[in-house]
Image (cartoon, rainbow, N blue to C red; front, side, top):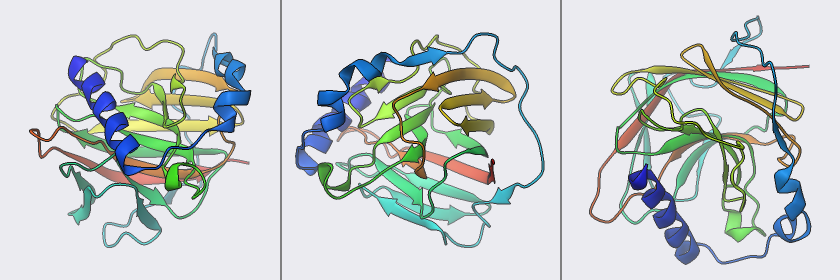
Length: 238
């Protein structure tokens, strides 16, 4: 965890150098709203299922995706999207060109034990805010024992959105792991390998935005590290 926190500190320094600073009126005016995050009691323990799933990656091309921030390398490798770190790059994101509001998202991920990663949901990138820096909720991906599945506020000034992040070992190191995310209204639920990790109601985050696959920044003397995603599917909810 010390190493991962160091990544976040480094990412902040790199981002400060790479992006121009900007005052976020949300942070200034709505600081009290940061407290309006509730971990729901008696959450559903089972992963939802149903029809209407649509693939976001066909294994042939990256149509419907675009890279934002940073210069990590994303490429197709077999049936997966393979992201590899690049030195001196800030956090990088491969993002859907379409925004999603209420949805369920499924994917499998395999991450290097030394790399911190995540998947953005309902996120934004707008020119007038830190030169388009990606910001919004991020579902954590990291080696076990760790904080995988909890929700972090990427570039929002909120740090963790999840009120607490009890360390666990649900994610299998050096293996593929199944993630399932459900965002409905203000409620966000996450599962890893069928186990419920998080169930919160967050009043502050955006109601709609893109999905983004993160390759985290690394130290100048580290890496390269990689992360892979496959079987990425979404089901929009009414």
